Image (cartoon, rainbow, N blue to C red; front, side):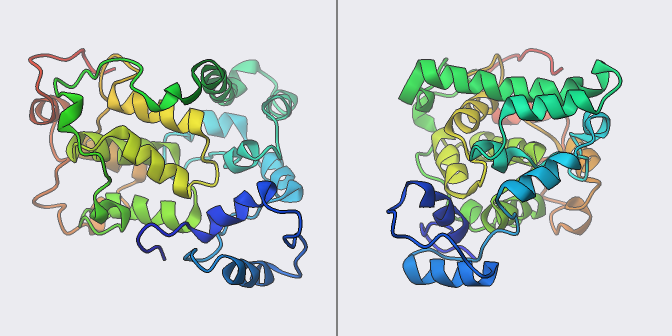
Length: 287
């Protein structure tokens, strides 16, 4: 339930930590919270995210983490991801606390390797942000797409923001982003790749869009990940194809997509997509 540039109701709630001291902070129910927010912030649209905040919810989520299952299935949309990122982003959980919880419940360090590695990436992005400051909004390296920066649009197309592209996957990702404030990391990468490479939009426009909606929206992790997809902070652009999408989404989007049989822009080999999308003779082999 988003319209125009109105901030999502879920995002408004997260700004309360820095708001005036006279704002109410105790509510009888989530319905009471939503009603109060709608009264105080009439410009906001939509409903509260289904993600429940607070220390108790964070501890419950942390207790449910299965490091081994995470490592085996984290790339799948229905995999055993932790969903801890909103609590980490807002300081309810610290990286060290999550690391210690993981190490406590595994018998072999290899079982927790993938999850702890992801915590390390988050710490890395934060340290880069400390060094770069607002520089995280600038291309860290030249693009490796063969296209000039000027050939990318500065604004996000409306059909992407409103989830009306006609592509079931892209529209599904957009709807989940704007109604829940969260997306699986693989879905974020696919959506970012579509924005930057298929629609030729500057990564900064996509990064701003994500930060407007994500409950775990962190400028460091967000912007530098967008740059990794765009190739301004990696050795090549990140793209995906339909086979990759179907494999890790269990076909949930392709099976019902009107463009699945014809007109799907992702139904090609990586070599074919690279030739269509980029103005370069050869690219490094895909790993």
